[in-house]
Length: 197
Image 1 (cartoon, helix red, strand yellow):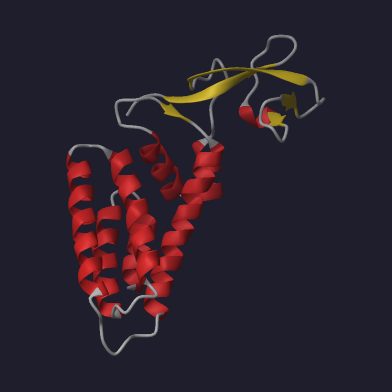
Image 2 (tube, one colour; image 1 turned 30 degrees about the vertical axis):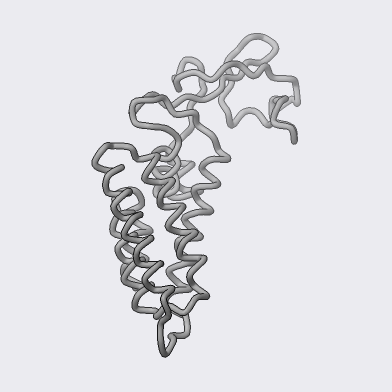
């Protein structure tokens, strides 16, 4: 994996500041020191280092969002050989997607089953098989950011087909296949959803 980068901050005396020592305005363009509200100079994004104080405490982030969301964000940001631009907004988005997957597993288990299926089943299963193949290939080629983009596609496909005439067992079997591919990315969430199903 490439280096994890974060923008740097300096006070009026040119001293480095930690990200948790500052706050930004609504536009995210101006920063101020928490203690005295003095203006802070936002520097370029550089590799995280203790000397420049542009580090993020992983324990704090894991406590707030969970290890799965952090891992998902890091893998989704860029290919393994490139640097990662750290973003709290990106981690929040990853956390929201984890919630969506959890809710989807709940929706599938609580869905009222149908008496019969229509041709929607074949279209759905064909799309899922295609996505499984693409995800498998992207994992083999270490293109984890591509895998994650495909997982978003899979989620949208399930959401679209929840209201169609497809039996619960078809949805459940397909979702289990997708979750098994998600486990290396988000093991905690993956195993919890698999256990529920």
